[in-house]
Image (cartoon, rainbow, N blue to C red; front, side):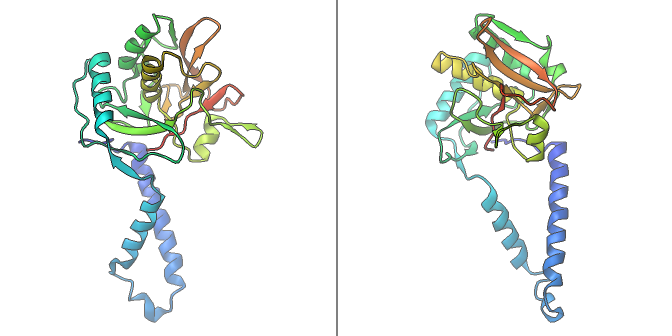
Length: 251
């Protein structure tokens, strides 16, 4: 089963990780007596310890359960005309709090415009989007390929208010948050409406800093109770206000 491929951004992050590891090793070796340093050169002890330490920081993963395979096979077949079998896909393990599983297929993970028509139809065409072609308008996404994430199983995006402060997209990047992409939010909202018969984000707007408009803006999605439409907005990365919230993703 193909998982999410590595993006240019991720390649840069891997380089930063190597550099950080090298700095840490330098500090470690400097603290060792000269006679003991040779014991670590060419020894797998350090590489094994580093690998274990890094793996301990990662969310636990599991193979997708059969019932989720059936659920997501049916969703993509019926709603997007995509025939796929998700058996064997690795997904994030369940968290200590209730979460929703979101499966992204490679044909839609970087193509929000392919998702929009099904979502729009489910909304009885009560829909507004910033651009006629979201694929062209929103070309940048943190993840691609076929993969899975989890988000908190709540109707309103829960993240973005800390210590009395409303956070902006720029601040979430500075904190290293992993947040949903626009295609992930569209799939999540569409399936939520299909299964629960209610809209996500009736009170707040989910900003999706995992995706970017071509002009650098951040997509946002919500249900506008005033006119009954689902809306896909374009927000400046520095915007921070009460209704602007985020969904952190477990990957």
